[in-house]
Image 1 (cartoon, rainbow, N blue to C red):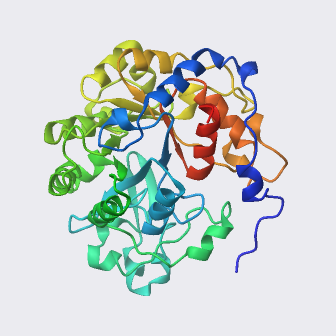
Image 2: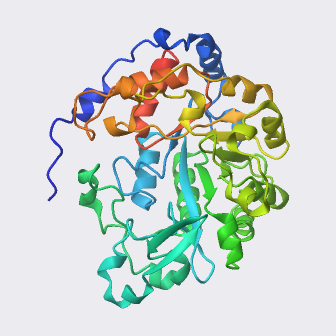
Length: 387
């Protein structure tokens, strides 16, 4: 059994902590507006974006702080902990099935290296301009992939999660849709999903386009309408535009660092960067085919050279002015993932003052947040909304 990391505060201690004030960061200006939106949401889950509580808590790859990511165990725990939405990332198999993995490189998230029958599948590929060596979903049929077992992606940070290595297979998206329908019937309300197309331009070049099979599944399971309890997302605006022509399901454009360019822009010779897309004109363009953006947290509040938070940008105000929701990513409990302001002690894997970090980001007026620890986020959201 893997030894527990020492110096980590107990989970009960963390969940009982109080949120610190954020006036020093200059974040109080929009806090009242965000809290008011939170009180206005019904939270009933009737299949409308308006029904989602604010701040919306999105289980990032499930409850990946506690279970190996993108497994039915991680998804179930996120739902059981109370996450408002549970996220899936989609990549294809060789025979065209959509499966849930953060990347098509499954070297670090499955036990594929322990299967001698697949040793010859190890290869090097260039994906979105970056070279990777390992095993890739597009080189396996679904039947072959199902012989593998999921493992913890970052065991050095989350050794406790390795307890669950080998417990679950790689789920297909159709299995997740069936699971969500079953859980929805049990709970008496729809289970919301947040679904990302990964590397869509790359896969289309292989004849494994993601959008059409995804749209077929959404239609089959009644999640293709504007009121569907599901949000589509991608770092490639072209993928979201393509999906907008296929289904009416709500859509979000993901945004990484300001100097980065979406890969479909690179392939098409479009010179725009994320910095261009978060300007008023860029946001207006996104609003013509999407209902929201998913920016990295640094686009909401940049950090200085020491890793401490500075003052918020105008992105929240600018996006809201164009009718766009903001669901930034990703907040985690561990020191190593937190802004320097909120780290406690020297152990990077110990929990820091994550409640303080949540308070800072919620005060900017964001509509929701991706988190590896949904239970912590829910307590922070309740604190923020005064209930």
